[in-house]
Length: 158
Ligand code: ADP
Ligand code: MG
Image (cartoon, rainbow, N blue to C red; front, side):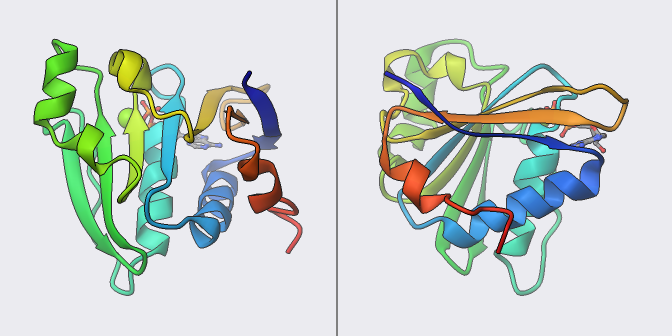
């Protein structure tokens, strides 16, 4: 049963950057974040801020919507950023090497519904949606894994 871990409203892109950085600090190799929400909701924006915060010399982080998957070297080891929107079959997820990386590398996955039964049980799901102003986003985190609640406790209060 999926339980809510947190729900926050960010008022502008910089607010989402702060959240991404705070989560990045608490990640460890093998963690997966599943990034849900409509086009333009802020999934790539969040992933970019998270990845760059884990790099001493931040690289460009383009949307992986055409390459489907991008790999980055970070302070917490190799990180994969995937966008499965254009995926044609679930076999392709395996070909991408993403399924093998679950539980080993930090994986950030946009459009995780395409994973079907390969969706990792231990993942934290972040759902992005529009808020009350153009630059506001509601970000809800859920997981089947109870450990996320303690791991993310006091996330934005430190
Ligand atoms: P997605 O990957 O979900 O399709 P993107 O991250 O590519 O969406 O685009 C989100 C857009 O929304 C960006 O242009 C970003 O600057 C803008 N934006 C406005 N407010 C926010 C916010 N609070 N958090 C994240 N992005 C925001
Ligand atoms: Mg995107």
